[in-house]
Image (cartoon, rainbow over all chains, first blue to last red; front, side, top):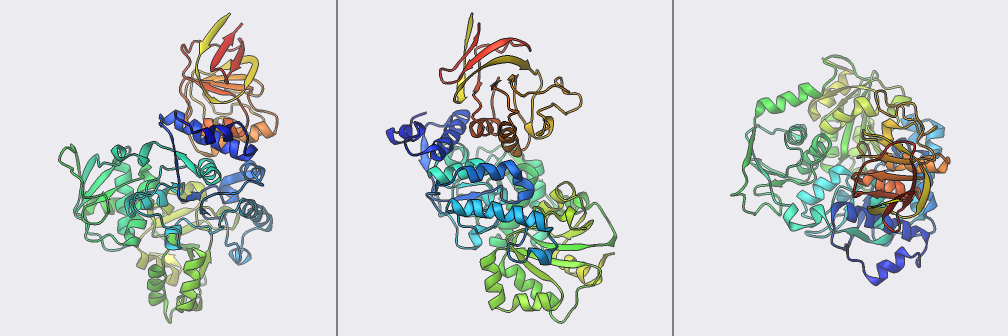
Amino acid sequence: MYLTNEQEAILRGEEGWAKKKCLEIIVALGEIYGADRLIPVASTQISGVSYKTLGEYGLQWVESLAPAKVVVPSTLNPAGMDLGGWSEMGVPEDFAAKQMRVIRAYAKLGVTTLCSCTPYLAGFAPRFREHVAWSESSAVCFVNSYLGARTNREGGPSALASAITGLTANYGLHLDENRRPTAIVKVSAKLAGLSDYSALGYRLGKLLQQHIPYLRGLPTLGVDEAKALSAAAAASGNLALFHAEGFTPESEVSVGEVRERLHIDDKDLKGVYEELSTIRSGNIDLVAIGCPHSSLTELKAAAALLKGKKVSPATKLWFFTSLPVKVLAERLGFVDVIEGAGGKVFTDCCMIVAPLEQMGFTTMAVNSAKAALYAPTASKVEVVFTTFEKCIDIALEGRLR
Amino acid sequence: MKVIKCRRLSRGRAEGLSLFSPAPISFFGTIDPLTSEVIEKNHPLYGQKIADKILIYPTGRGSTVGSYILYGLSRRGLAPKAIIMKEAEPIVAVGAIMADIPLVDRPESFEFKSGLHIIVNADKGEIIIP
């Protein structure tokens, strides 16, 4: 792999220990994947933020890099709690103390401590063909597919290494030839709401591991639909890029030579709801919306459904979003309506990376296939995957019928 | 003396006794981070500790948390002295660099066993069996 004189100097330690270690990480990944050189990145998004996933040694690694500073705009994945309202969530105090240590460690490196899986809804959106190093899998799929930016699916340490060095190795989805569609998927299933896009993403990921799908027949693909689809496809099949005819910026490519052809219909989608739900009826402790983090549109829709109603005392209705989106939702009155009905809007965290198992929850309803896939193992809860409207109904009734 | 050429992924030089696994290792799941013991049932190295060994195995697998587990082992003084793999993957490469453990892969030949006295000179891309 070609390295510039300046990069060689960093590897000799001339710009400090942290930068040397970080560049060693980037170079090793480049060697493994056969990169020809390193390229600059315009931003990074770093996973490994919840103390639940990062752990003590991950935290020590982040702390060890100070006093180095990130050299490009960098944000964080969700933390294990609302950084302000954690006690309202019922997060144990010792967890909260460790979580705040993680946040301080990243802040010390100059990271913008926006803790969100949807930084693109909060002012951090890469442009078309811009090289970035992002690690949250749903955001990776979203920015590659919907915005046409270029990132591999980074791990937490490699995204942090890119943040400190401003570099990544030139391989994988940074290269034109690896971004072409390899399978055509005809979607005839009726897509009614966001959970249907989530179910579609889940099915795509299951069917097409190692492929880049070219989707035909989508009725629409707005930011919210692309967000739901990306998250589920990345969770079920490591999908990092899809093209959608008429909607995504790189979809105007030739697909004449693509042999692999698939079809997804109503039955396939319905099957996802059944496959991911581990319970069919009974009490639901928690209805959790916001995987990925809720947009303003989703909070507006929730406020419309909850106006003048009351969430059952037998359950909790929690929305997860990013801090900037919550601030706007407060200004527009959505948060007042949701909280007036007994729901809560939390920021910085989500139902997967919060320590739900330490907070006494055993059953959860979600409208996200990704959350439904991860929750039973990540948080040891039984789960039902259903539509947004049904989730709100469950919260009002306190149980699933 | 036998010299085997290989590819350097994490710098350094180490000398010690080999621990050879014909099966893949995932640091998250296979290894107990508190003791360095192989805890995965049915694994060929089940019950053995990887601390202070020249750990040799074909490939890695599993969760990205594995990088931090390797780093954690080194903070506890329980890391292997060096790692030789047939084909490395990002999780172990990142973990080895964080932990300052020499790591090489793609050796000219992958004929090893446990209990050999081995020198890994990652800087030169060489495995030496004196």
